[in-house]
Structure formats: C-alpha cells, structure tokens
Amino acid sequence: ELKNAAKNGGLKEIFGAGTAAVVSQIKAFQHKDELFELDHQNDSYAEKLKSILVGIQTNILEDKHGWRYKV
Image (cartoon, rainbow, N blue to C red):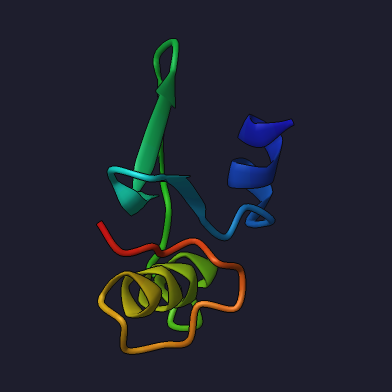
C-alpha cells in the first residue's frame, strides 16, 4: 500500500510520464487528512528518464525506437 510505504520510508519517489508533460515528479500526496511528503532523491529514476526523453526529443540522443519522424 502506498501510504504504508510512505510511512515506513519504503516509498522513494513518484512521478508521472506522458507525451506532453514528459516527466513530472510528485513531491507529496494527500489521502484524507494525511499529507505524505517525499524526500529528494539524488539518484532519481524520474530525472534519468526525463533526461533521456528530452535528449531524444531534441536530437541529442539516438532514437533507438523510431519515435521521431520528420514533419
């Protein structure tokens, strides 16, 4: 359960990913009257994923999956 992982320190990060937003880290979530704030992660998967996706979008990194195409 998400709340239990947040309470016991097992929850390290949460992020959303999509074509428009790329990657957005979630720094906190609330359920009912409880607020759960997450510590900053120095080795964040969200930051790595965002860096790779932006690199592909901006033609800095190779597009191994054929996601880019000329318009």
